Image (cartoon, rainbow, N blue to C red; front, side, top):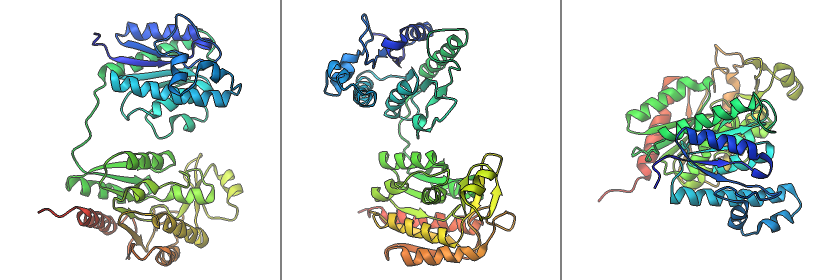
Length: 411
């Protein structure tokens, strides 16, 4: 039996046989075993892959001819994605893989990345995709996927793509050889969101909780960060969620760039673990360059964060809407929830040193939260700025209180 690390290679032989052969040879030259999953739809190539199109279709409950008879690329691919994920997870359970590489255009990237998103964090994932220089979010999602841009179309080998494929194959082989699946931490885990604008607050929270024996996973709340937080909240055993950055909720409500969708924060609330909310970054929505921000949000107050991003000041109506939205989410909570509201500002932008400071709006949000939240929610008021040490200390105290309260009494 081979002791070489196993790498799953996902490439369609009906359109990319030359590329598949080149990548396989490169991988094998690096000392890894290759298992080729071929999700081809147009035709089956023999001799073919270790996991054939027929195998993939069968895993989804169809024959490959039934898939072809759908005569709709989206419907065909949906079946092959289902089958590819099932075959991959079966393989990984039987003889664990140490890495995965996929090559494709938009279709191949969609299937390959769907398989990667079903695999554990930390397992090496490389996607060579013509989409890598464009809109990558649908493919990377909330996972740790590395994308390579082939520069040219994936249409045979040339002096550019040959080097890209080679680099991608060597990289996944090197990662696979060094891959060591880590056991889950034995520390209780807390999930927390942040942005640089509230870094003073969240760094202090993290350090204090770590001193108390917790592992704190911090997420950059620009859309996919919050989605990753929710994914882990749903999948893993966690002690608490600290929702200190609500910009993704604001952007969902106001069509900002950092929306994480309508289900943001639901996972932790549904899990029944303690959830502590604070209105970090509630003072702004995120838009693109300043000219885009002025068109999207006319008549507002703006702060040009950089050439690509503009912070747009929320006013009373947006803050009231945010409070009602959070209350709607919290209404479905299965565990304890607290909301802590500082009255002197919600981020660095909303501070005397910032460019969007307006302390008159903090009480507006507080009053709206107090009116909208279920009676079971502990709403606290703190006469300080969110980035002040006393506010971070209050959040830590509340997290520890709720976690301790939730723990079963020992006999």
